[in-house]
Image 1 (cartoon, helix red, strand yellow):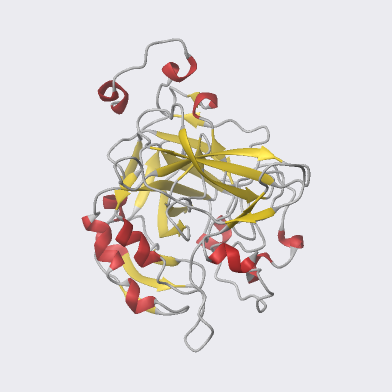
Image 2: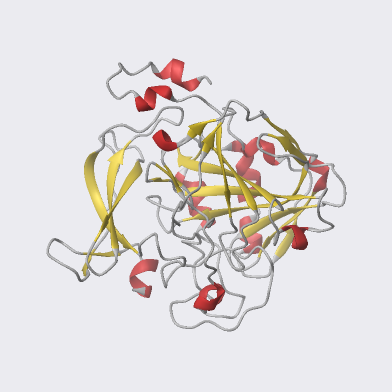
Length: 375
């Protein structure tokens, strides 16, 4: 399973009962030949493995997904009731802690099931568009970043981080679902081995090639990031989906640094960068209470998931995949699939900052794309 995962393959049951066979994953473009995204639906099998059916379909960021077409692959994953990732999963480490050496197929972060809490507010989750609740009381999210606070970019062996000076309120967010100002600590990405998956969160079971996380901490209630990361209302993370599309000029400045940090624990200075350039123009978002997506998996995060994805091109995502989990001199292991599988929503409510009554009225005539694109 380990080898097949890295080569972009997946196990699947081609009919019948429990048990998992093997099949290659074939990812195709749309009818026009352009890169396409996927819509995934999960089906339980008797051996408690879920089987995702991935459909080929374009997706409009400011309108809900509709019917799907052309099945292109089936991907088995562990059931969402399991609070740990697939054995071949590699995930991001927020806390910079040292870990014991690799076991075969398991990243050090996930070697012990004892690390997995029994909490009911774990992340990431699938966001069902129709089930999210519009909250008129949600304020607009205000983002104020000072490019001069950007420090460096480094490969920590799980992702690459861009870190910021956070001793003052020079780079902060406020408003939205937040009661206090939250300081920007760092941002990073999660991505897949191929463009068919990679994001941590999904929308109506739709997965994206990658997801950006901008991590902020509550400097009003806590003295430092490490303390905030372990306590309720300690962190606020903005999630932004990346989709295949046009070249992202601002992201390219960051992509150009990646060859310099190919190996684990390499770092380069990266000054004067405003990460708001990586945000979508649409202000709409979902929000819910959740957790870190790596150990210690603390349920300390107010998640703010942007509705509209940002476009990047295939070559830019391919540069992400040139990075390595390993240090120089070690056997090379590609940095891919550094995301955690979906967790159960439990009794939580996902709130939205935008109205979406048309999603619930299935008999109504669909609105035009123009009217849906504007909040």
